[in-house]
Length: 263
Ligand code: GCO
Image (cartoon, rainbow, N blue to C red; front, side):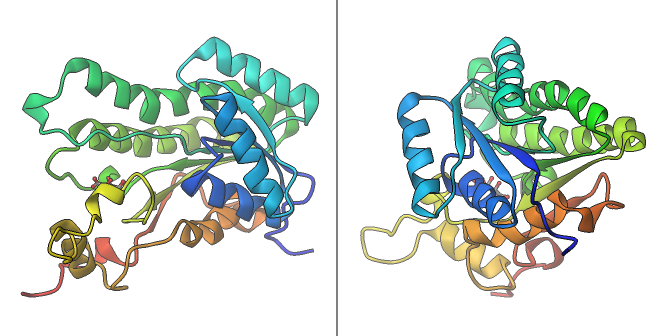
């Protein structure tokens, strides 16, 4: 049996109905895991289930708000009853608001912190007792390059993702003794709906200046695809990473290692 085999494992991917969460869920399913995901509406739940089904995967979808502790407690209890105790948690659900900091309302700042940082705390807190009971567990927090770097207009996101990196290290510190590994994946610039505004073709047909900037910053010379994250996620969800704890694996085509292309 391969060290990457996930047969018999129950995984919860928050926001796993589409985009990066879906690709990770599909990757874990192909390695053998049973996939549960949550999302914010019945519509996305049905769409998510159908998208997994089209790939031959019977996923379990739930509508639950990850920023609501009571809803998360209920979600984890329902999954336990219907599917089993969660072995693998991927804290993937996230939002971004691109607004200069001094124009950002407290409400917008707090909303981003709620979804990107407080929700991973809430969901991990709800899932860890079951992992302790089972004697093992894997938590994968979807961090960001913004766990390391700042940039104009993403103050709340960078603050949340930097915090999520430290929450990762703290979960590792507190629960490593229970055979729980908590690591992060830090995606680089991935071509998703969330980054679509940064890649919009200009009225004259040229690439968006930010798109050109990212290409010049990325040794791989391309944006990532959501699929680029599945191998790293399977690794961090599997026995192959049983002595890897508290790390952030940056999947960025080399951005963090590179000064950038000289003009
Ligand atoms: C941005 C992007 C990034 C990415 C990604 C980078 O506006 O700079 O949206 O924040 O989402 O997280 O790692």
